[in-house]
Length: 495
Picture 1: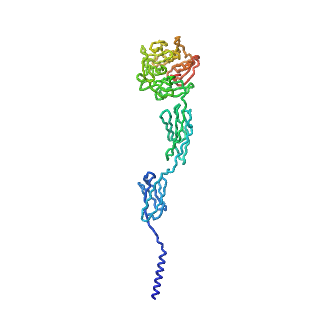
Picture 2 (picture 1 turned 180 degrees about the vertical axis):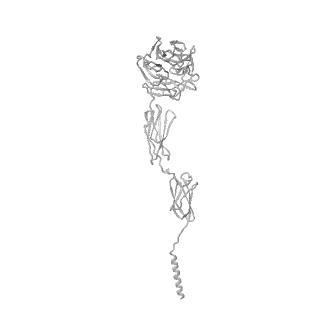
């Protein structure tokens, strides 16, 4: 009986143990994931970056220091994702251990980190080493970007004449028209492209050379916005502006042997003599201590002298000579009656100086010549009423051109009613009227001999005193041939 009981007890133990061996033992636990999200390169903390896991646990956002924490994560291996607008999303692997903290730091690149720079622009026109380019030039180029990003361009032009730099920015087109270029100048141009992401990319450098300065032989004055402005012109009437419309400059006189222009201009409330190159550059003031002055500054004239190394100019009743450099100021003559010297011309063949003098109203005119010692040589016009002017010697000095108002009218406005041109022969002391075919009601003013002395160039205008002045020519041998040379011009000089 006792044996039977022992057997039954053993069977029960075996059955119990067998039943227990069928239950699985599970390994469980939880840990913590912490870390930081910063920008790639400078490690700046990124706030409000989104951090999540796969398999999913929790979604958290970084604080102002870029820190994050996901607590109570079951142990295991996770893919952790960090993302923020404007940056590339990044994944890191993390293993969570029981009752442990795992630290993962994310360094995020900006979204454009993998963006390629634009291709270098290709310059098209004008092609490299182009010559005789107009002063208005159209620059064209080609540009492209690997990701087809929107490109903007900058264009830079330098030149071999000065340190000026022309800069054009924020261009979206691949064509640019540039104006106001200088004659006979080599320009260097380059285009830079940017996609707003990468560093700008520059093209190669091309160059082009502008046209040679044209051979203009006529110079004149034109009124623009209240100022006298000096222009040049070829014999076909193609004009170029030489002085700024913001300054008052007038009465151009060319010195052919040195290719310079002398002219009058205001400086500090006074009128002075200046010189410049024929293209309007290299302006230099000549007079300083003694200004140019007289009864009417628009009527005053001056003259080159001594192979274009000196200038003659009036200051009220005195005639001065000055070196072009501004030195050697010398008084050559003074009127004996106190009348003002208004116009002067000098002839190298005879060494005579022609003068026109008048009272402070412009009348009581005398036109005469003197030698270099100031001794009167020829009396051309005196003892008449009315206005006169426009002195110009012929090349050989035997003839003198002038104008005289045959109306003999004298008025406070210095208005002329019938100004005619005359050529006075100094050998025969006779004057010939060249204005016989002048339209009635007009004045012929400011005449000069043409270079070949077959024509005169002069100004014709209505005698109303306010109408436009036009520059004309007339054939000396056929006075019926009066032709318009330039509209809206005065004070012509033809060398």
